[in-house]
Length: 163
Image (cartoon, rainbow, N blue to C red; front, side, top):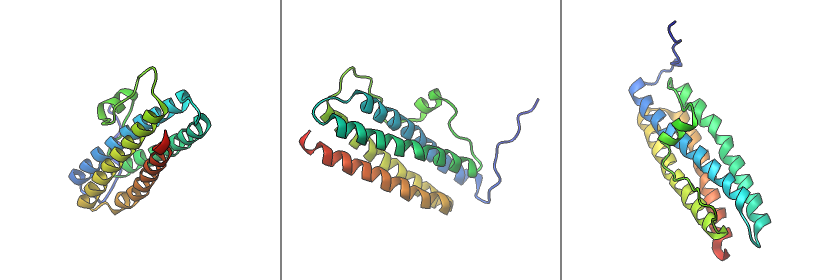
């Protein structure tokens, strides 16, 4: 039996959308990696600012997870396929995992801030690829995701001033 064609019809050139899909799949993989790291820190934070950090990490994780479906659906709308498994995520992610037994709250804040800023860089690259491809829908929606990541980095920075 032949597999059905998953190419969604689009007026965008397939070569151009391939670079957009690759950029978005990298963003998607990093979003899942950042989501899981943020939840890990949410589960394992300790110390005098426990409640504040615990709640902030949970809010940020929920925001990150909320973008993943929109990212994947944008890839599909351009006639491409997206990530399929945890293994696929690990092959595409650029953010490093943190499997340490203990991470200080201050290090958690710093690491998540830096990861969010790296995600901003990837989002800017995806926006540039979308502009090159004439994909104004992707170009526009990436702005919201960039703003959210910048806000997370800002909150993490401010919370970490005295951590």
